[in-house]
Image 1 (cartoon, rainbow, N blue to C red):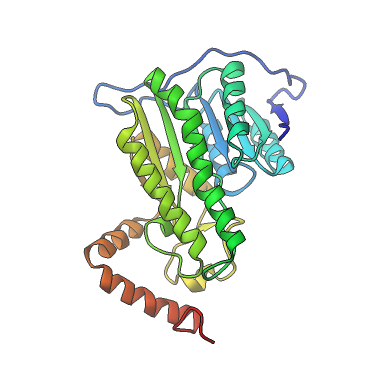
Image 2: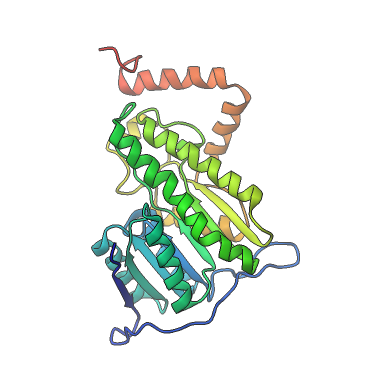
Length: 299
């Protein structure tokens, strides 16, 4: 798939792509990162809107040197680059890319490192939330392609370089549904559970100096938020994408594996692990209350 590059800087007349040396993520003696964002080269997928766009803005505020913003929607990601680039001195590159195309991802990584230097931070953020119930075969394929396999492809293309350099942050955006369940949608829930498993597997095996983080937002107001989300999850404190981005970067800087935007997500996960039978019983009751039915298939 052909890619489109667009660079927006504070000086609108200066749109020339420049060569840069590499910047590596450093660490203090106690293993905590020291100013990992300033001067960094970062990549954010799913950057055309929502959490991805907010991550681009948050990274620019922290003076990342170059941010490559990726999305399948070329016009949306160009808008991200335009508005963030106008507000900061950070170079923001908009790239139209299908993250489910591994060859395209590999080409993107090679081009980015050739033009801007080593990638210090990769935010594997693209995701989809489609369908309802057990879902159609097509919905399952899309969910697994975008919510799982795209992250596998990113890991294959990005982590070897980070391991060779002994530095880097690889951040995957999953969901609270990947720790608990979204009672409305099986493809989304299962693909996000698989993504949490992938993130944990990567974190266990990745080379020294490289850190993997898994972000599990609970209630976020984005274009992926379904109309019935508030009634499906009463008591959820819905927050803006910008707040998720801020909490994500704090967690990444602190070297956290599991980054939660809502403390209760961790509390619920602990309850689920301690007594799955009770957890399933309580979730069945919640599903009946929110959807008005007590079975999946029968009328």
